[in-house]
Length: 170
Image (cartoon, rainbow, N blue to C red):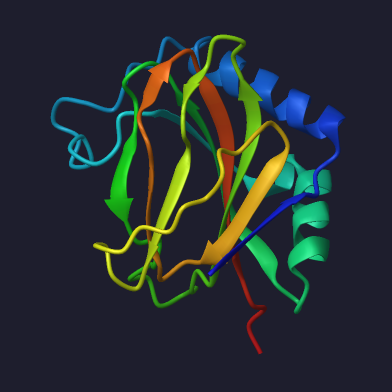
């Protein structure tokens, strides 16, 4: 169903967390609300990064996943108190690529963080699988066609890197 591991060097985690904060807070980006079509799904702040900005992160993730998979998209997300990402699938309707694996890596948790993190439901959004609370450095990998969500932050902040991997085109 899913696999959890510590696969990314800690210095890379810290660099990415700082980049997320500078990009999001530095730009005064507001929460995803208002006329945004995803406002009922996501309340986190997102910096959609280009995966080539973090080659070491992508290489370590690709080596861990194996099977010739390559990172096709990488986002940095900041969750503050009350922020969440409601239950959804990561499958893409775009025929030019296919998300096969989804990953979430915890980059930073504030000292006062209270909350769970990722929940995976599998093929049926009514069947929740328990994942132990993810700590800094934990990477969770699962198939992109599985229902999942990021639980609300009760207190503090959580910063994560979300990456999608697919197979090279033949």
